[in-house]
Length: 80
Image (cartoon, rainbow, N blue to C red):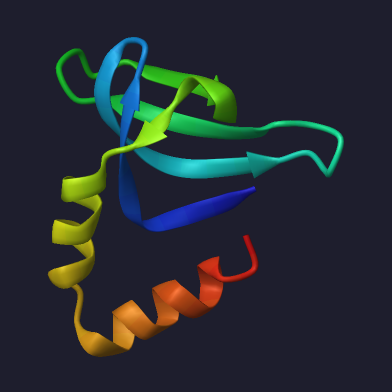
């Protein structure tokens, strides 16, 4: 389990939201994303095949990070 900082904007079957946690059960299983849906406030867990990262929102969020946090974000998530 990995807490995502910053949360990643995602498109889901229930609408747009932010992934706050990623669950990895190993190489023989999908990644699972815990997503807070923006419109309804619901919390859902989705298999990787059902969600997509929101392209423009992700880059806006990364640009707003300080250089130190951006470097840390890239290093932590490079192992994915």
